[in-house]
Amino acid sequence: MGKVYYNHMRKLTVCLPLLGLGLAAIPGATQQPASLKTASLQSHEGMTITARPWTEAALYKEKFPKKSPYAAGVLAVQVAFRNDSDDSVKINLDRIRLSLRIDEDNRQELTPLAAGELADAVLKPGAKDPTKRRLPFPVPAGAPKTGKDKNWMELQTEAQNAAVPTSVAAPHSTIQGLLYFDLRGQFDLLSTAHLYIPDILVMQKNRSLTYFEIDLSRPGET
Image 1 (cartoon, rainbow, N blue to C red):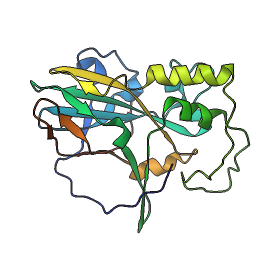
Image 2: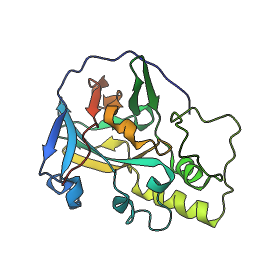
Image 3: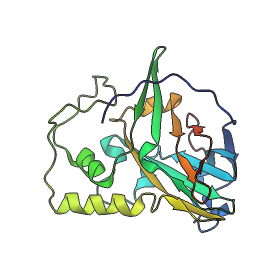
């Protein structure tokens, strides 16, 4: 992954806490644990996006029963894209970024991990020095990766199954799943985190929606 700097952009809508509302309130969703009862959301132009960073190890057990991304320093963000309009929309998932403020003059962005990249991040060899603070990236060129053995294949499949299943939301429908970001265990950086979604296209009209920038600094609470 590369390093990206950008100037802080104006917010066109307010990021609001979604109190007492699990994804069960969204069509096609299932009931979530009590720890996810608070989320961040943003809504405009017929699209509502909710995002919940999974900041508790227990949340990963169902999707990842053997190897937890969280234990390896990878954050999962549960997102739901609700399209209340009469047109299909396409979300460019590859352009989503997790934006972090490292210090006064340094804002960095993480790109979402593909399922195979998550398997590499979780299974890569070598112990981490907990006393040495490292920025989330860049990953050194030529960094060692695990072989694609049975464990790798299993974890890759689990990550793919739990990820956002499609980039297209039909009219009056919701898609939901996980996005993955390698924080290398520095979950304290979430105190400054925003999820930036810049590229959503109304397909029939070939018109782009205004970007979404969702404040993740207030993770789910009981």
